[in-house]
Length: 196
Image (cartoon, rainbow, N blue to C red; front, side):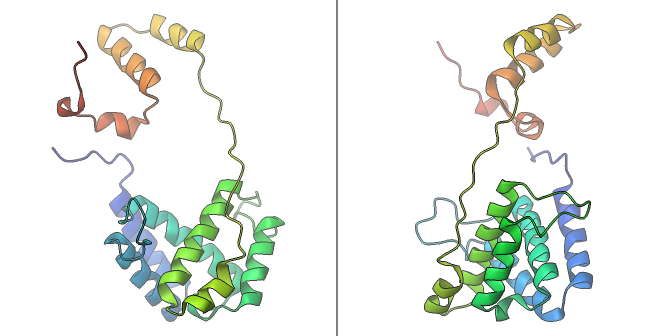
């Protein structure tokens, strides 16, 4: 059975590539497209990576992240110098680079941009000493933000409002597994193990 994609990731990816081609220089488009294609088949991963291929949703995010860097630096990414990287990282760390609506990027997004840029430069620039000079000093860790979850009491209240057993099973399974809706929709009978 085919995986259910409630987000139309393929359509969003195709649109993002069209916008990327319009929004950046031909050189940037070409190197980013080459990086994305290589990451799809696992060529951008380090040798010891547990997962080599980058999924379409992650590649879609990488388009967005690399465009943020291009917009700020106004330069071809494969021609970056240390001073450019310092300016970019400082801009992120000091919240000088903001979302279109003026809000700051989350710490996780800042970290993701740094990680994506490092992977991109590692793949694009074949000279390891140059890549090290550009990226070895970049801190990519971040403090996780606590996301509030429903309490058991709130779940019980939801269950009391269910009209059918099917609704109760759905709510209970989502609560017990912590699955996102798309993950839950893609569970197959073959994925379920009966515990005796």
